[in-house]
Length: 77
Image (cartoon, rainbow, N blue to C red):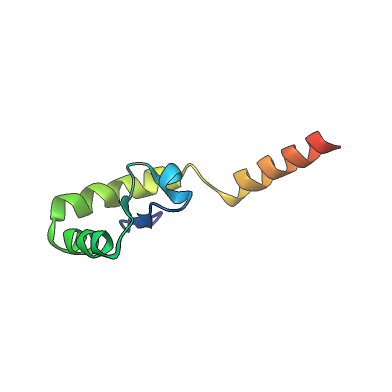
């Protein structure tokens, strides 16, 4: 996603809450197949998700994760 690759994620995981409208969601094999076909044939959809990806992914970093984890550990002390 951070490199502009459109993503397809499962609805039965926490990824659904995280990715929101930045990725396609599936719950069945048929939905997954249809999303793959759509990304291969629908240039607008592919471009839209490719453009959203890097912006969305920029919200997350290992540095931010480490800082938030340390903050939570410090609260426990």
